[in-house]
Picture 1 (cartoon, rainbow, N blue to C red):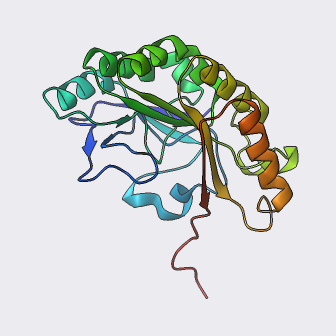
Picture 2 (picture 1 turned 60 degrees about the vertical axis):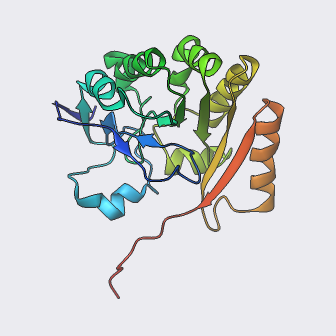
Length: 227
């Protein structure tokens, strides 16, 4: 189990000047900083972003996130709210215990905002009822990051994430519920998951489950490598 540190920050909402080109959000947040999936390719391992990050082993939980989201979005112009950020997964296993992400989405629904979710966890299926309400009222986008269907690859590179087939199954569930859901095929790992066969398998499975979109992205390379 990772070391869990509860925090009560003064703010959580990050407002972008322009909607993000990939994820479309105008507002972003990190409910959890750090995540249990322990992805070996995570840019947080190399970049650190001036934070005390120990990917997979130390998780900061913003326990007052629902109150901060209500305060941060009240009276703001409408825009897609990303339920989670780049250095945390809002549906990592700890969410099953704390349920903070669900409470945040209840606030988003109450304030009549659209939302987007990016995860590697099938736990998001738990909140399909609430996410469906957000979608019917405004818009909800659910995206799953999946890099490979090969057992050896995903177990090596994202050892504690939900199995890819579980993620694809939940894509199907959300698609059947009328929620736009798709595949974030990222990062594509050079010489590991970048073969034509591997990419075709992922796109085919996404299509089979009724995915609305597929977006690809390359690997973030570590900067300032020692020579």
